Length: 240
Image (cartoon, rainbow, N blue to C red):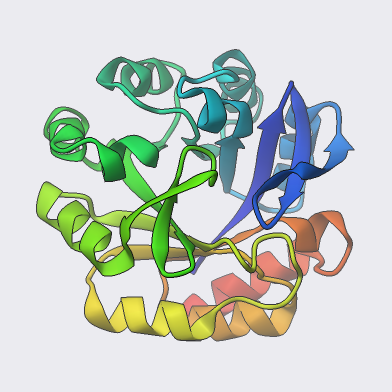
């Protein structure tokens, strides 16, 4: 299983939200590129980045910073937040990003995900953020269709990689929603990346044993609950 340490960007800083609440934000570092370099030094090869401002405004706000992270580290970077047009995806591709995550536009704009896959292929993934059984959009401020309806539409559009976040668990250090990921793994053939609530090494073990493609670690690293170097080794060993 691939482990993706996460950096959430807001006003040029590395921050974390609690359950998607912008009013409950903690600033962890004012130099996100330095954080990415630390992840790399610990053995990370991949990085998950979210442009929190972009998720609210509907356009990429942190593109120069994301480009700097890619340039300075050479990590495989997947990024989401505010990606609403094909031009947005093209800009991230030019910046060297390895995967662009569609969120609101993929769920709420018919045909957009299919057009993106047709033009950019596997560069495109989708983020499905679950809030009370429905897909959350616009920076988790609103909800759209039901979970399974959205996932089926994404599959039919050609999306093959999905980052699924249980918003109720995100940043809460209450454990990942194993039931949710088991259900999705059994029902769909997506390369599934789990996000939200991964808070211990035992969770990393469990998610890897499910056969998931990847998992994202955020607050657990920043709070010191998980040693990232050890977690990366666990994820690698479970995959072998």
